[in-house]
Image (tube, rainbow, N blue to C red; front, side):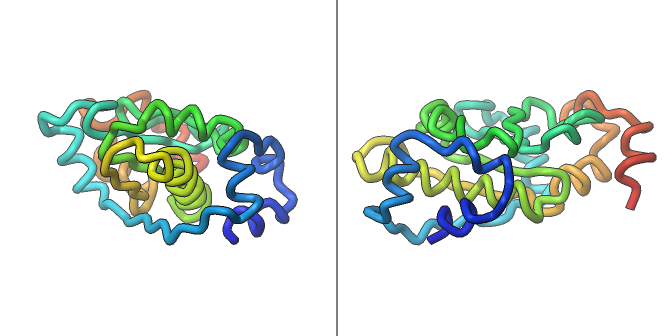
Length: 173
């Protein structure tokens, strides 16, 4: 089971698991084949620039930790990975009627996909099983903020708080 394998890894980001989602996942009473998919930076930019409304039509979750500084996707909610599990139930409740939730980290290779899977499973347990919530998609931003900022850093409708010094020195690939 996904959560069991994550919890066996020595990491402080999984040390604060609690709440109804943990209980259900840990005891294995709900097993769901929860799928997430990827969304490209161009697709996300199109959504942000459309007439869609943040927190009503879509919600962007940035799970970067200290690497949050230096810029972010405009309107993204920072939910640091080190504390994600302790707050996932509240995030699910806040977004239960949002049809599209997009997760990312710097590269969307580990933290973003892991948070997306945990969120999707938690949402399924808390709302789908209870007959609540709405139809939704959980997506991962392909290439993470690294690819998004490389393409859109000069567009203030898409990126805010961008700092050239941070990206030139710390994240230059």
